[in-house]
Image (cartoon, rainbow, N blue to C red; front, side):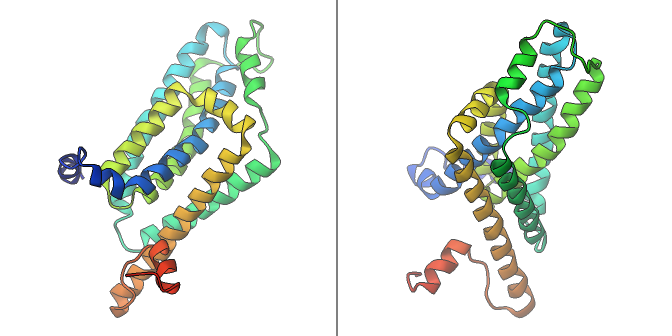
Length: 241
């Protein structure tokens, strides 16, 4: 993985590399935007349950834990997605993630970011107050699920490009650490952003299923070898090369 990254880094200043990877980079940006808002809700809800004097510490270590999880999962995910059959399984898992996102968009958030912020700003003792480690553990457990969703979607969108995956991971970390609260408000104000993100994640899931199905058939029968779902649509419309 490191060797592939170093090779790609040699081409990062080449406009042709950015042109070739413009679509996956855009997809990753929208995926990160869509999934970053949930982090603000989870971290904020957990932090609001501890004493005000510990809230900043809980938020810091909660975000730090999420960063570590994303770095850990990203390296594993891209390597696993190179194995024939696992990309298909990952695509099916992303379909489930898409279904969860659809339900979340249709039903609305259980807790709005405004409600979370009002609890964080409160000087009173929370009615369900907990200790530092309990709140941190809550954040880490929630981040396991969110990290898997984010990394799987980003790794699927990045394909075989290690550099695109690293850029996507960096964007996710920055958005989560710096702008997750703003993004949560943005998603609440402009719901269409969440719908665009959902459509892209659904597309990535279907593309992963399509590509790996072709690889499985290719490995077994020597026909139908790798093409993306977009290429497949173009071929069936008579527009492919």
